[in-house]
Image (cartoon, rainbow, N blue to C red):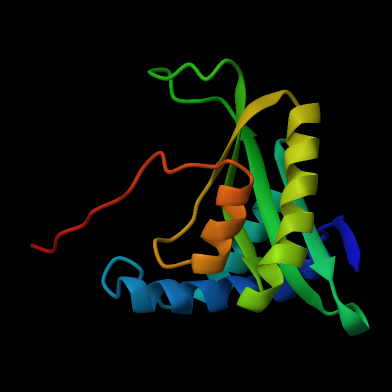
Length: 157
């Protein structure tokens, strides 16, 4: 197993894993998560910008043949002014593995390291986005003691 900092050369592989997640989420909620036209290129632009930021921790995991089979991106941010968690927050919106069976190994490895690095950067809390039907990912997060803080409910009109 190979865990390392993400580089600009990894953007294509990360974007493809992100596309898998978007397809999965679109099945969960087809209106809110409807993929935008040009989403893959937009994702690449977003990733390029993210990887260049000092407050971002971006890691990839490579399996056999050096193929990337998971990634995590955490941003060390200040909580909104109406909340006081006691310090900085590591916000993880992008966290994906190539197969659900990898959450307990690859996902765990990625999460362990991003939590460690975020603590070193002064974070006191981690906020990880997880869809309601992400069973294996939810199980991993619950094993770490994460609990649900927010749910989004949508209605068309």
